[in-house]
Length: 558
Image (tube, rainbow, N blue to C red; front, side, top):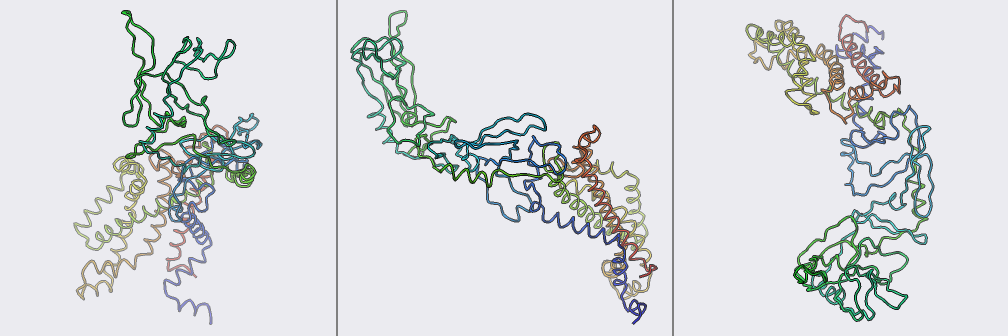
């Protein structure tokens, strides 16, 4: 069977498709658009930087050339992160659980990683030191101290819980164990130390008591010193040197605190004793060593809940942590497209920027088609005063420069993500309306429309069922052209600061942030990459639009 016979058996739509597929440039444009759409759908699943807006900044590696590789130390951030769902990750990304530290070199010794932080080519690095436990695990906010002893590392994990003690038990312990009456047989010297012999003094300093005679007796309060941690080497009882000894008078307990006057021998001008300083101490602060970051004691009914340095740490062997760090936390990271001025992965921001460009194009085209087809169809089919009124509106909108109109709409609607898309769409319906109006005018007097009218069909049915399906070709062409125009308008707005706001990776914003490096003769790649991306995607839609036009031209040969 001859080609002419085969072509004569094809429907008009099949012929148009064959003409479109024979247009190599149009096919190339469709392939580019398909790949861009696939990248936009997969989003953060395929980007090297999977954080929201690909905004993970490593300032030490800013403005690096494509292919730049450096050794990174991944240090676990000290907070919990919610579980990352697949759909949420695709749409919004997920947080990086680690702080990225670029290094020139590193050593692992005695439970710590000592790293020389990269500061630039030819610049001496800065020495930093991280515990192996701090690198691998999230540490407790109540106490981030890590202890190394005998090849073991002790730390408080992030799920480190408060301990609870009955208030009545705490009061009893303070009264019976921490308030004592002590007699000093040989007195106290001028520095507050007990005299043992002519050449020997005690190890405990009593700051409230100096120059006391032999046989002196006082009531003392033992207050546990903060910052004294339970050691891994021993679980022995807390020594007296772990307490601050205060000489007190008139102690009393109220709720969860002890109140007392500091012992005083001072007299006023009349010879009367001056009362000592009033102490108000929480029972927990008296009995336990507290973390130095000021964790509060929580009252829970008849119990007190609190953190203490005396709680047992989680213990792990150094060799196990060292193996984990070397395997999973020291990596070679390559920036295939280099980095921008903030040390962000340029490839990741470029890929996420595809989503913004396609989104603004899609929404703008949908808005322009909805408004343009409705107004154009009504004006073309009804004619008369309705046509005149709509054409007046179209010509008025046509007379206003597109960017000026977009600026006005952005100012009116705001600079939000969806407001920008809406503003662009509201400026692009005029071309659609003019083309649809002309096509409807050319079809409203043809026989099938007059037949539908004679059968009593309403105007809405005639337009929707009989006219619009026959003008989809020109509409598809203008839709493809508008898609490309919307991408350019959004990029221009973002470049000028009126479009998508940082840190979202709009290609126009990326160009605006980095073009100065191109002008100053620095690394040109951060400015060239988004520029080429805009050019290629706009070219792809224009090629597809031209392909649609040629394919729908019935005079074209197959």
